[in-house]
Image (cartoon, rainbow, N blue to C red):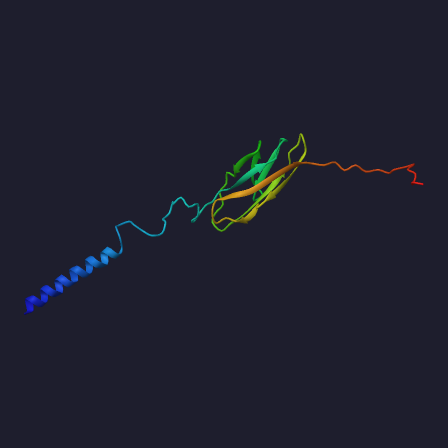
Amino acid sequence: MKSTFKSVVSVSLILTSCVLSACSGPVGSSSSPGPGSGSGSGSGPFTIGGTLTGLTGTGLILQDNGGDNLTITGNTTFTFKTAIANGQPYNVAVFASPTGPVQTCTVSNGAGTANANVTNVGDHLFTGTVSIGGQVVGLLAPA
């Protein structure tokens, strides 16, 4: 009877271990993405970039976090060279406005916290307007 009991216990242990090992799936598998997955999110560092439209002048320089300068030459997508660590701020600004013709540049979505690659910073340029002022002399009121 003792040998039958030992056999039953041994078979039970073997079957239990087989069932439990099957629950974990194949070795190296996981339901969550690991490091290096192509999702663009994770632990960083992350790139900061966007799209520029409306540039007709020359000399536009964008700056990220007060020091990563990027010269832009034409309507294009752009990415700053210095990546930002996870959870750290980014702040894109115009360092130098374009000339020839003079243009005004507005930055949209230019500030935030890096927790994924940023691709939606928008820089929109338009040619500046000139204000004309003066005084009208000699205009007669209608009779």
